[in-house]
Image 1: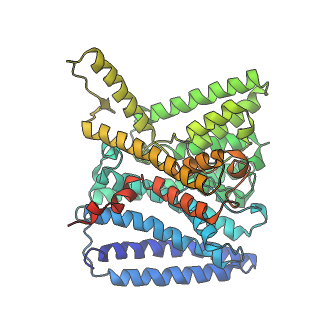
Image 2: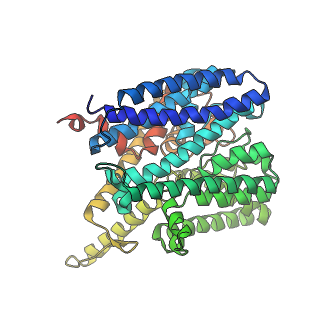
Image 3: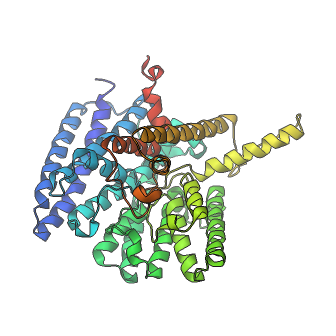
Length: 483
């Protein structure tokens, strides 16, 4: 009980927060005059009761977490919250079975954006609002997780971003709380800015609210089956969305430095420069290809190419067109960029930019060592020396990321899914991207027709990818539980 008590206390606080979030769609459904409020009330009561039990169980616990407890707490929190966040999809008149509900909730909280729901335009607004809230909550949870916990756990090279906010030895330090509080305020302000911008650009107020929550969190849930394709004839909205998706995929700690007077913090960062330049090069090259070889109108090609490339590479998952119909090259490119994510400390998923940069440094140094065996070559990242431990961690993470996708794809194929669905489904789940490729789970489809076993596997893949793989895998090893 000494091991579990502080974990239960934290679970109670997290579930209490989830309960509070359920009250907004509850009130919204009451205002609508629909029966949705009964399901949200029942979900809130069940979640609140569990939260109280957890908090009472851990009330007298000393809030001091060991590394082992922190691994368990992190993994447990995301799985438990997904389980309770699924309740409104089961208990409201949407009436999805629990498998579909858990899939939708996990997709929301991990900001993946894959969905099993169809006919979104006909769903009650309170349900659409709940989906948006899940992604918004998941987004801020991901940022705090990346800033305060991952560097402390030294997962996948994240020690490179170790700050004062990563001290969990006794209690969260005042400096850490200050940083996280500032990040939370910035996240809220950015969300409000997106709402106002969307509304001014021509979105309906409700659409602006929901899409603001799913844009800044790089989540991708929409209020329409066609996603942002509903606004395909409003290029201003597509460009605004592209801009805000990019903002959501940059490190939020750098925003803190920016608002505190370091106006060059963003562009001075090596990861940000690399990410922005890569996106710009890809968008320009792909737009020119479509304009020249597919004879597309240049502005139309540039707008929709930029939107869809940015959507996938930031792991948001919106779509303005069916990009899988742009040809074989586009099909291949979009599969590749499913593995590429934004920056560390952002809401994006997949393999973060800094890992590609460090891998390239290691590759170039290996070439130099082969040419000059006695040479001494030093790697620096953002002015800091990169030790061998960082390199090993990045290589190990990348290897197990690829293994996770491969194993998940094999399991999906064993259930009878075709090659494209299996591979892209596994990649989009572990990368927290959203849509896959092909006729079934592509940008114009959804995941509802997949067997229940496949949905469970994909939901696990989403949580595995969001928790940076090692956070989950380490607690599954016998050595972790030995004293």
